[in-house]
Image (cartoon, rainbow, N blue to C red):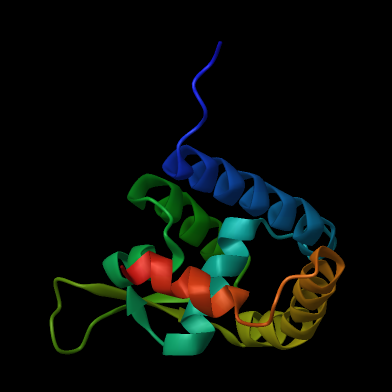
Length: 139
């Protein structure tokens, strides 16, 4: 007889499955725009905060350093973002949204927000769910 899973195991499993379901739901919209989820997370973080160092961007997106470097390199190659040496500390490089990146964000943000709302509504999730999840990330 197997032991009953702990609450921790159930929470982890539920969060992983939910993450995968949300990603799967958003991917067609992102794919149509030629983006990956990690690229969108970077674009959205830069839209929210303006210029960010790679370390700040990694924190904002929860994308690891090596993966984030590839993401930003690809966004630079497609003129969605650009890099610039920090005026206050020349050892740092900041990443900014380019005009194409701002246009991309303006076009995709409402589509992705609607897809998220639809998914939450279909699941019967309370509006407070995203606030609760945000609390978990800062606990």
